[in-house]
Length: 323
Image (cartoon, rainbow, N blue to C red; front, side, top):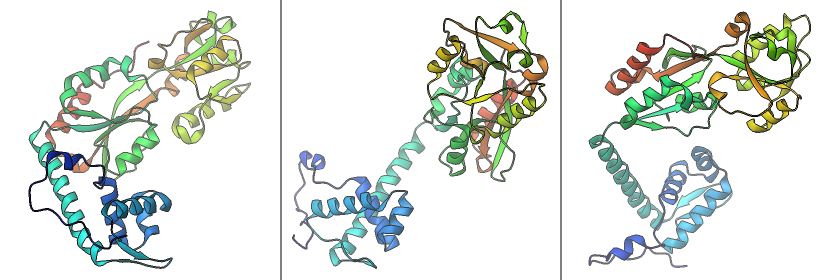
C-alpha cells in the first residue's frame, strides 16, 4: 500500500471524475473526523451511535480508496499519520462547505418545520389535522409516521423535530411549551354476536367475559393507569391480554369472539365482518379519552411559522372527535 495521497492534477477534471466510485462517501468522512477528534475508535463509535466494527470497516474502506494509511493504531491508542493529518484538514473543509451550502439553500427556500405525529391515532381521518396539513403543507416536513409518543418525545428532546403531537404528555420539561389541542374518544370493538352490542353505550360490567387487548404500561403509562383504575372499581375485573402486532389480526380474533379491543375513534375506519364498534358509557368514555398535546421548543418563540401553527391549534382546540 502506498503511503502518499494521490497527487491532484492541475488541469480541470472532466465531469466523470465527480461520479467516480473511488471518491469517499460523506459517511466515511464523518467517521474519519470522529476518530480524529476522539483519538479512540470505541469513543468515536459511541459518539456516532454505532458499534465499533462498522466504524473500523468504513475507515478501512476509506484508506483503500485513498491508497494511504490514515491512522497508526493498536489496542490502546490511535495516532494520525502525516497523510492522515493532511487529509483531516481537507475532510473538515469539505464537510463544512457542504453544511454551509445546505444552510444557504434552506435559508433561501421556504422555511420548513419538521413535525412528528404519533402513530396512535388515525390522523388522516381527523378533520382538524387534515386542515392543518393542507394549510401549512408548503412549510412542513413530516417525520416518519410510525413513531410512538415516547419515541417522538425522545427525538424532540434531541432537537431533531421542531413540533410534535403526542398523547398524554406530562408537563415536566423546562425546554418545551405544550398545548392540549385535541381529545379523542375511545371506542370498544366487540364481536357482533355479543349481547352488549344491543346497548346504545356499553357498560364495561357487561363485557367482563371477554379478554381485552391492551398495551403494555411503558407504551402509554397515563392511559394504562386510567384503565387499571376503572378495572379496580368493577365488581368483576376485566382480563387484559397483550395486543397483537397486527391490527387486522386482532379484528379477526374479535370477529371470532375471542376478545375485544379499545381503540381511538379515528382508528375505526377499518371495517371487518363480525366486528362492531360501540361507545362506552359516559363516565368511562370520559375517563379513557386520549389527550393530544402539541409541543414546541421554547427557543422557537421568535419563529413566525411555528407561531402561526400554534395559533391555528389555539383557534381550533375546542372539541374532541365526533363519533
